[in-house]
Image (cartoon, rainbow, N blue to C red):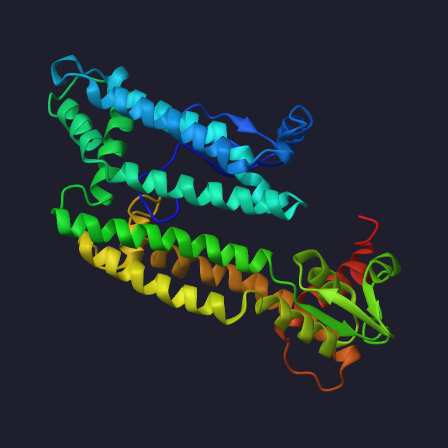
Length: 365
């Protein structure tokens, strides 16, 4: 979850057949097809205020939290405390994930804005849950009994305690308060960063000659201003230019336009977020933000990541150097005396290699 180590149990994931949502606990998949079913079976959804759906789910989660906290310590079990906590976060994610997904895919601006407001409310709720002292004491109280659990249950208990530790619950009130502020701001920055990219309306104007090589169907899809074609800085449009357009200056301009989406606002957000992550790591006692992030990853620490890359680089470099030589040889046919490949050359000459050496037509594929 953005801004907090206290993870929600449902999260966006790449499934075998499309984007969906997986439950950490149940291994459940909801592929993109489920989104279509969700929309078509909820015909009035587009007219409904999306935040209301989220608010209702949050109220149910709050009620479940209150029920968990109210259990007397002597009556606590794995099922009514640890599993109940996991279930309530899983239920919240299941109830809201499709709604929040609309922030990225809905053609209706009011639906996207509502979904984004819902996403912010959900993020803040999870961050607050990670700082909920009553829930923390309930879990800690159960763990202090040192119950005899099977491996799966013990793993869930250990991870829950770990996440509360990473949320700063073992620290004093002042530090917990500051961590709450930091995590809330980091989550907000992440949402604004994505929104700035999604809302970026940058277009770059090119002549037909400058777009030579672009498939006719793609060219005809662009709006025009006089003799100029207006190309939006979307991933699919820029990828098409980088893959098919012969003019390297056009490819360069398109590459730069794509990389500048979000503008200075996103640069400022990144700089602020880096400072906040450094402060967060320091408060929690980690040597760096990297140490904090890798603790819950397979690598466990930054040194292991660097070791992996140091072993991987020589292996990858051999193949990369071979590809580079083939791409550069093709570029020399177009640009006499060419000695290097630029970033905006790679996709173009990769596609050209597929066409000339392997007779693969990317458009038909």
